[in-house]
Image 1 (tube, one colour):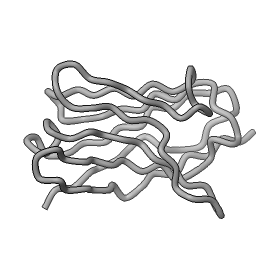
Image 2 (cartoon, one colour):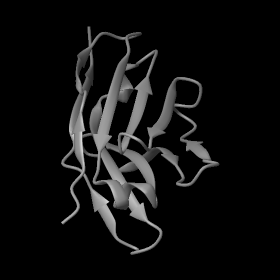
Image 3 (tube, one colour):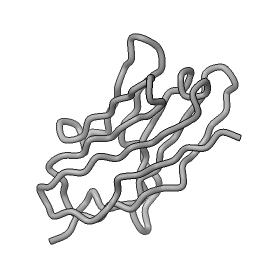
Image 4 (cartoon, one colour):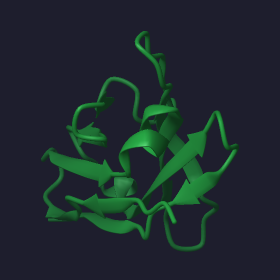
Length: 119
């Protein structure tokens, strides 16, 4: 069974940076659109950023993080990253990695990693 293993969350001060990582098994990752979602207490889970599979990837961002967050993928390492800069308290949430495989149509979630932005 495919698993997504996330890492990189933690506590950071406003204005600081964090990088989240999510690793998946090789063949599944290669054909998957990868996304980062987040869910704050009392709120719905929302899409933060996504990146398509293939050689010519396309990225997309939520308006609230555009210009501050960058999603990227390293196909050699089967890993997707979310670089988060200029963090704000409102970025505090559990961040989840998601993979949508274009071949199998599987939709897989990671276990989530907590990001807390506070002074």
